[in-house]
Amino acid sequence: MNTNSLSNLQKANQTKIACVHCSKSITCGNIKRHENACDKNPVNLKECPVCGTMHSKKGVTCSYSCSNTYFRSGTNNPNWKDDTYQTTCWHYHGKKCVVCGEEKIVEVHHYNEVHADNRPENLVPLCPTHHQYVHSKYRDVVQPIIDEYVKNYLSMA
Image (cartoon, rainbow, N blue to C red; front, side, top):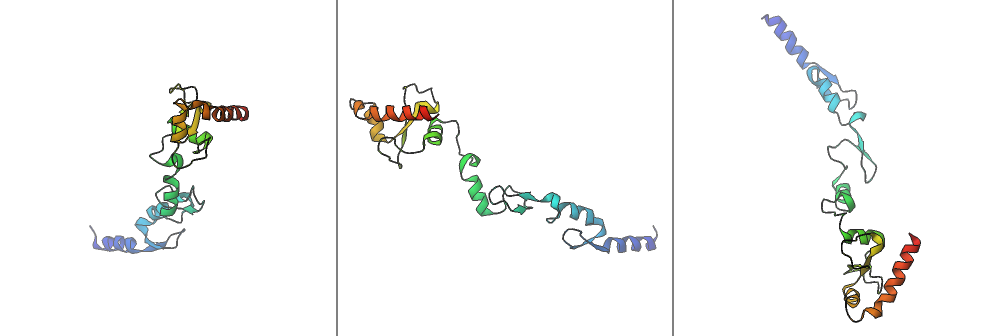
């Protein structure tokens, strides 16, 4: 091989060209690869689903903060179970006892007492005390309130 052609090849490899997107100086042999992967290339930008800013990061969101918001709540959370009767009940009725308004500890009562029937109109959120009332001799204390709640829910649906 000719040493003159070898030195020309080395010179060509050392020649630098500015990237059209970020103006960074890149060698001739790598310029196409850089421009395709460049952070400033509009093709590589995507919108963050939380804040709406455009970013070129590999992940779904633009930052740790947006990532925490996106993945730790709702259906994007890996622990989210949309198919349980509790999540169905709380989605349609809220997590609040219909008798007393308790919000910290809430259970789900199946109105027709068929545990396989997980339709929203069959699920009633109750605190443990009032849920126990329903399944005891004190049912008549809370049943009228629950009946009224279910009647109102069905009329709104």
